[in-house]
Amino acid sequence: MMKRDKKCLACVDELPVFEGYLVDVWGVLYDGQSKTHIADDLLRKMKMHGRLALVSNTSRSSEELAVLLNDKGISETFIDGIFTSGSLCKERITRHFATNPQHTFILVGTAGECHWLTTMLDRQVSSIETCDFVIAANIIYEKDEEIERLVRKILGRG
Image: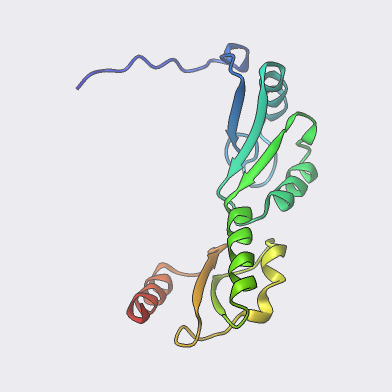
């Protein structure tokens, strides 16, 4: 097996220069409770060199994540865009309901801080047997056994 020469940065001063940067939020800028100790310095230095976009697999929309980050003291000043899986899902699900207004879904997890999802809860049903599709978001409190049981039911339904 060949050993790759990887250079690990000792500090943000060693940041390579690129035209643009994609930065993951979790663990880089935010640890789940507060901003990380490098967040401000990292964003400022990256923005000096190029465009900067944040990416996250959060269920929150891009706008909701921006509010959270701002509340934690992470300024939008240096950020050119935010892309979240929540925004992609919101867009796709909204389009689906526009063309299929009779469809319903079952929610595995909770709407939580996904305010975009709470606007759709009038289409939520409690039965896998009667829903048209499943949305899984913010799976925090469910036990693995419960999720496995639900997945088996969903797969059994096709």
